[in-house]
Length: 308
Image (cartoon, rainbow, N blue to C red; front, side, top):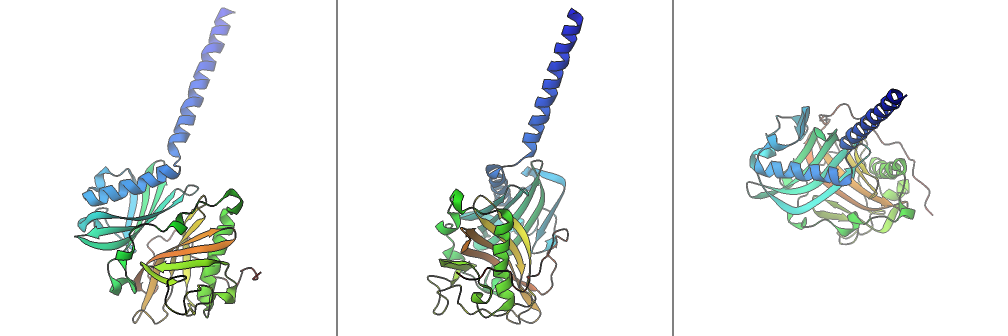
């Protein structure tokens, strides 16, 4: 009898220990917001130190800069010399994506870095970057205006204003639909907040402070982008931000055979788009992103809500 009881106790102890070990392993494999933010910090610190070996990367990690696959440690890694204060993070806990818009100095000169990391089991498995160094590369370029992240992009939506992931994406897609159609965003009934703005490469291109005729992002004139496509790079559900990688297609405005590529963030809550912020770079038209496993979408003709 004692032997049976002892065996039962031993079995129970082993089972509890195994369960605890399994839970610890599961916990170690997850990455919450601060974990994701920490990976961005680690990446940027390693970049400035020119020491990719200190990064917790998976054995098969891939690194691209401006769509080209490079050995980790090449490209901006060679000349990165300082981090400036501007850094706007986009954290997608569900998909393990840690993305950011950052201003970095390269050999003493400020450049714009769009960064996307994929984290799996506390390891970096994907590193996608885009670097814009000047106006010739970015069409617009006022990096000195990027000093600190704007308050509007960092508003924490109240619980009543938060929206499901699918709805955040749907509203961001209305913006892409508006660019495809052209004219102005009224054509697709884009749900902009009254004080909504857009900043591209540090330049206010729509909303308060923009040039005459562009003070209202909804009614501002925009060219048609019939070949526009986009990919979902990250969805920060807690902050209400959707980050797209967009290819504007050849609109014949960026030099022969060229197109504008953007990592563009949309601040969405309460059913409205409150802010749009983009880092962008000119690339040859139809340049693949370097990440073929992700779905590339084309806007539908119109799926927006009717105006109130």
